[in-house]
Image 1 (cartoon, rainbow, N blue to C red):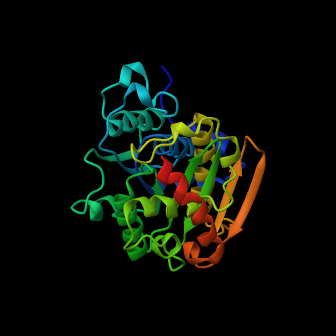
Image 2: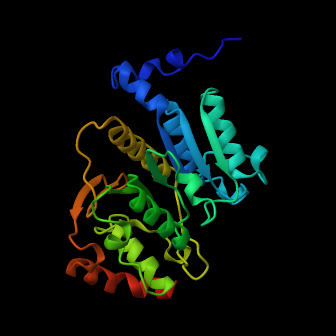
Length: 286
């Protein structure tokens, strides 16, 4: 049986990164909250990049309804905790990796430990878990931790980077003091200012915010993992520009369109206010 060797396992990264940069990735610590559609894909992508230390959090178990998009979902893992399954998968890629699991998810009681020593925070939380997401982004801003989110929309990806000292998650999305349904509307508007995915929604009845459900695809999750992995690499290695909020990048593979949108003021921007007038009735119908 061939023995694990870090240099050999990640030797094919060399060329796109230098050997010294690979050493930086080996020593980096990335926190990922949420290990479902995008979170699990983020973890395995970064593990294959050679990132050596992870804090991962999820309180859920795999079910058959996860099969269409979640990298840890198999018949053999149904009923198993996502944090346990994905921790084992990352360790199977890199047995030397330090993977610290938080099987109760991220809570006010453990958030300090979850973010301790972290170089980058990667958002993989379920769309509807808005309070947990807000708590995490606020904590990252307070600690000067770069925080990134890549949302699977239709058959594409929307990406936002919250740079320490730059525009915060709250300043961009403007969620403070508004009802839950309005928070969802503002989150969608902020993630997808161009709404590239909207024209090819084939069955609108699949979107139901009252029941907290919506359609998803594996293609979108894979695209998210590629965009996120590249962005994390750039942040960790300090290589090249990465446009922070209020910039949004969206790529839609179905429509073969790429857009970069600049929204000063985030959802307080007049253009975003017009978009919200379009989005709110759609959510109310759901």
